[in-house]
Length: 116
Image (tube, rainbow, N blue to C red):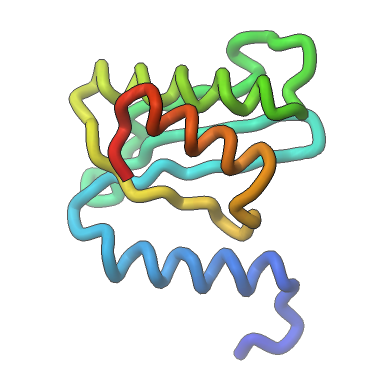
């Protein structure tokens, strides 16, 4: 079944399986990073809708591919989620390793008030 899957896809599937087991009804904070930008959204899987989102595209940061930009995205997505009434989430890093920009986004969201 896993023949031919990339390491990224294996990590993504393993992470999603673990999230479903422990998330319950909590929304998930999904993170995606590309070479140029960072994206984050709070998704309510029960209702099937996005509660809040933020990215480096919305703020038009000078560079979306650095830790400072990821920190700004983390703060913005946390503020938007809290404004929508969500305070507890489960962190979905996808297939990305938890370091660098992904870690900076998570720490900024925690500092801004999200619990995970």
